[in-house]
Length: 147
Image 1 (cartoon, rainbow, N blue to C red):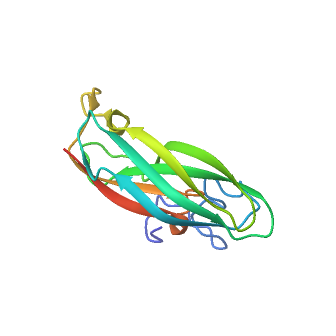
Image 2 (image 1 turned 60 degrees about the vertical axis):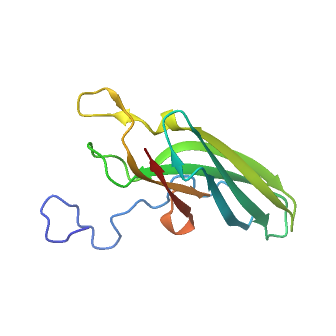
């Protein structure tokens, strides 16, 4: 937020952000995310990205966690969203239990509509985010390269 920008809303008592991030509050458990694995690190349009993350229930009750997969292109010809939801999975864990969530993402899903409104698979770096919501502080991140 830029307070000198005429076209930005300027509420005095609240931040200029959503009250809750997308996905907030989908579990009552305390789940810790660890060991984000993304393979391969370089991929072409024919490849499939394999993402895995380890979850551990640190709470006192059974919990079902929804894991979100987001992507963001670092540079592109067309302005892109900060986070694009590309997949999700659920995992039920007992107290103290750990488990692994595996997601697959075909590289063709990383295409977007270019300036000519045709699907474009653009070479460059793409950030992969995994977490319980779109809140940036709770996301694990890896960078891959498209070629």
